[in-house]
Image (tube, rainbow, N blue to C red; front, side, top):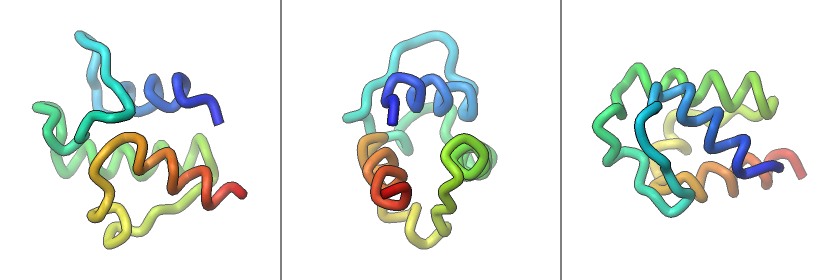
Length: 76
């Protein structure tokens, strides 16, 4: 999985254009994070990576790297 492409997909889903983000970031601390952003990210992961992360499972994820790790595990 291309992590840089994931970051770009995440930024598009959450509508972050004006700054760089890193895998170590706690995404819930982004000013753009909202319930709509959550739904957009869940849809993007399904569309781009053919992975479904249930809401209850997503709640325990803290960083972008956590999301990447779940996607990689489910694709393996």
